[in-house]
Amino acid sequence: MTQQTIDDVRDYYGKVLETNDDLKTSACCSLDAPPEHVKALLKNIHETVLSKFYGCGSPLPLAAEGTTVLDLGCGTGRDAFILSQIVGEKGRVIGVDMTDEQLSVANQYVGWHMDKFGYKEPNVEFKKAYIEDLKTAGIEDNSIDIVISNCVINLSPDKEKVFKEIYRVLKPGGELYFSDVFAGRRIPEDLQKDKIMLGECLGGALYIEDFRRMMAKVGIPDTRITAKRRMTLDDTGLQEKAGMIDFYSMTVRAFKVDLEDICEDYGHVAYYKGTIPECPHSYVLDDHHEFRTGMPVPVCGNTANMIKDTRFAEHFRVEGDFSIHYGVFDCAPDSESSSEYTGACC
Image (cartoon, rainbow, N blue to C red; front, side):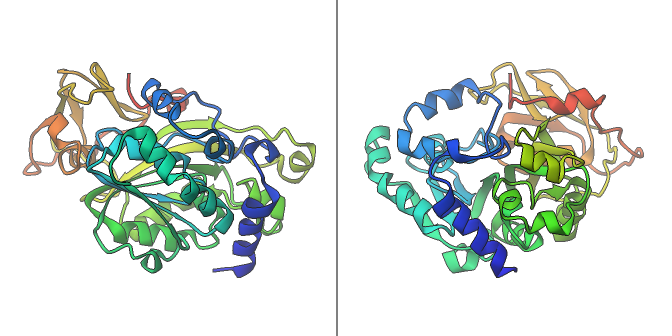
């Protein structure tokens, strides 16, 4: 872990940035409108917390009532307070961040939000720790249902260690659901060390294929994209430094279930029951799997496990087993345009 990188990031988010108006690019700002149910939850968030939000997506899970959710790089707590409403009073949200100034704001408004939500006891707690070392925050093995992160993992100087920690703390069947900045090529070393590039979530952007390899190495060989958009560099200085690199804001999900490194066909068929309240007519798992209520959908073995061995099991009926193998399953987006999907359901 590079201490200089950690110090630069802490400085940028603790001292340089006062609000999201101080950002030089849109990298750490979500341009996509949140789903309607999230818009309603956002109305309950304090304006000070909203003004200090630096996320680039909306990795807010569905079907998560009563779960334990970990928010890595929680900042002032915007997503954590939204999650508080999603998991309900019986659920639990843990926010982890390394920046004192951000955590100070988050803790300041815990009571305000619990009163706003009508909760008798707080279901949110914030802890100071590095996302590369969650043991110092007391996060135990196999203890978390869902890990989210919003434009933070790119800031880590040791991303593989972050993903190893995520895998460690997730329960079997748990999910990593995060938004971040990715790149179509590896970032040159001089740009990785550039304080502004780093602080604006560009210098540490993961090359998409390196991310895929890293996840496979830690134990998750199949990850899914739920949203993707190409970013523009509107700042002249940044354009001169990194204009040759294609950057993307992406939301990705990954499950801690049995997976093969490619999609294989075992004859599974999945039916969505229409029982997730926000998605009565269909549920979108990723950029190439939309399950319309009651309609049979052939799925690969990996996709079958992603829905039958996770919290989504009660919302699906999956027919078939792994007794007969039919070869490779064509499990890819039909076209590049399909990867631009930005919603979670319809």
